[in-house]
Image (cartoon, rainbow, N blue to C red; front, side, top):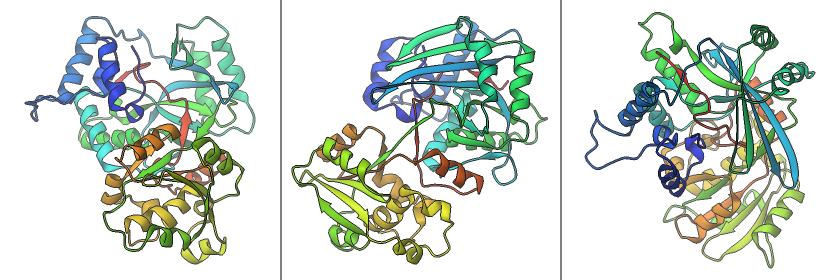
Length: 412
């Protein structure tokens, strides 16, 4: 059974999925730590053994010949229906600085260490990296429709999304899709950690002849796909026990801070959607009050970041981190989080795409405040990636997530 990717599974969801079925893929991508675990016996070695046994027992079956896969996800968002189509393939690993594969987000060391340990143990790509390819037209549409017009090989609902999967063995179709991407830049939408882990794993095996470890598995979606939806990722913050200055002074230095009278989450989100660029919602845990923050003056950006590329200054998430979150957490560098997340940031920030969950985390006392942002336009993502620059961590949430366990790529 498939499951959501590891980075969006809560502890409670993980427990539920573990109990749902003994063959749920959560047992591999997000196994449990047990008392008595050692360097040689732990959640990673158990995942590898489980993957091996599922293959031996023919629960997982390898294709008899090299294949691509086409995936279709049908879903609703705010009352509107969407269909997003991708095709799953392998791509040769390339260095960010010299190759045609472009990231757009900073990654977090803890997550990379976890995924690298899992890759070392399982020696397989367990879920595809979500990658965008640019199109001026829609040539891919007719190629993919030649596949999706037939009955899918698998079809199921998961968390409100209808998922369909087709196996593609027709070399004419495979060749058409391959040629479509020749010399095109590819932009990582989701899965930066896994791509960088694949690069690290390749480097660890540099003394071995070229082989499967020189490739990784990706799911490719056209930038023209009508089902390409980006949602915001909100920030919940645990503040230092003692701030350098009162929080209102820090925020009012760069923002107009408007109290939302009679505020609730729905009203705050409505106000935020209607507000100009560089506006943010704020919820305070101690008073249960909602506020709207709006940048005081665009000149503040030039003054604060005189040498920062224009495409980064257009990102609301960059401005939020640099002018609000960094200053609240006491980071000395004005532009620290846009380039390299500090240890304090990793420990004091949680990234949440569900606004209700963000409020709940603050009301529980686990975190002190929550910042809410509008989604990042796809044009901004492409502009940053094209210049080989990076956004702060977790700047985008491409909805819905690709599922783990739908297709697996063994590396040996």
